[in-house]
Length: 311
Ligand code: ATP
Image (cartoon, rainbow, N blue to C red; front, side, top):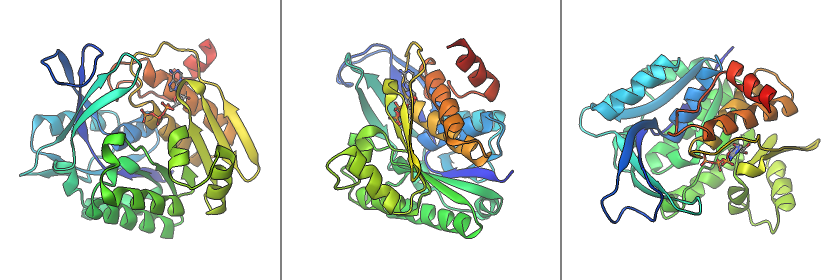
């Protein structure tokens, strides 16, 4: 099969041991964990045994090496990940509040991943690519938006498809070029993978049904709305499907959306009908929340089948 490729940030995540508000006093921290939404996404694709590649950039430091070694071990093609001699690998500090909300301190915008470029290795990866995934969180500079547009254009010209997860954090919405880039990606994608609030963010629609109709009208083939412990819903021109969340104990929700999206897209590319794609995707999201650490809950089909069978 032709590979799935994405482009964007590799970072480490460092998480607070205890819930609370922000980072304004010394607290216990745990990490570094391999992270970055595109990295989690592509690691999950590879765990399903599908050819997978990531176009990115890290610093010549241990945070970068930790990530590359992890992705390579899980089967991701890391040939298009540059190692930049002058920039350092980015980091995200996260602390959960008592109500489950998260506070972040990001050092991403000025980190090595901002230097992501499509190298000759990246071009070769895109030649073998049947599906390109865009993460909104990666669209934080004009240069990165351009690289993503170039990549998806190439994949589309080769007959491939595109998916898009807006994946916006409130901390990022202040970046002026970001909103326009998110609206543009909506025009290009075949599969749109928003959360409930993100679905409403990118249209003028007053309610979800109108937003879905409007987005399908743009030429998007399928919309999958992720609703956390409320499960997920699927919408295309033929109708709607809903899948409940699997009953699991949530330890750490980070990465659930990325695993869900990766599994949905992989199953779809492998020709499974929407209901089956949705069922595996929900299992992948559920498994992700049972593990501490953003990329620690990625899993293969055997583990997803076991989780589905046990619930
Ligand atoms: P993030 O960007 O933080 O990864 P997201 O908003 O993109 O999150 P979620 O809706 O949180 O994505 O999670 C994706 C999917 O994972 C959900 O649609 C659901 O199927 C599954 N999931 C998430 N949280 C839980 C949970 N607590 N229990 C079971 N399944 C869950």
